[in-house]
Image (cartoon, rainbow, N blue to C red; front, side, top):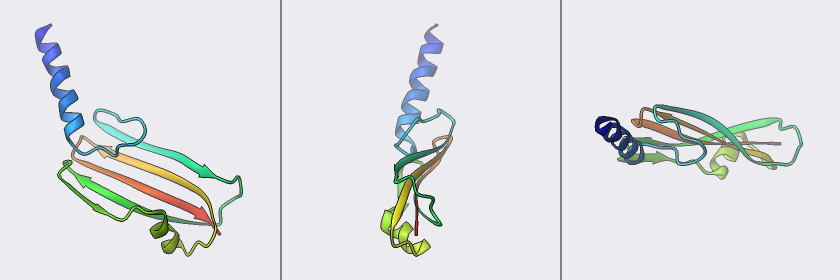
Amino acid sequence: MKTKGLLILFFSIWELSCASPGFGPNGLLVTQTKIGIFGTGEKSQKFGKACVFSLLGLFAYGDGSVENAKRKARINVVEEINWEAISLFGIYSSLCVEAGGK
């Protein structure tokens, strides 16, 4: 029983201290989620994606702004915004902003 409690404590601390996308549900080993955060109901014609990345929770880099996603797809009017989060074993994680519009 003591060993089980220690394992739970170890994996809880490990998951919290390593790379995590920070949004939505997080799996202990693998996370892959897509969350819609804004939408007008119109069908988007173009999509742009901008991402930020983290390694071991020690290094983080990237430009995950809506403006960057708009610029990549040459979008003038944003009709929807989604977040896509990926985390692998607490080693690597990414959070991408996907903007859709005209």
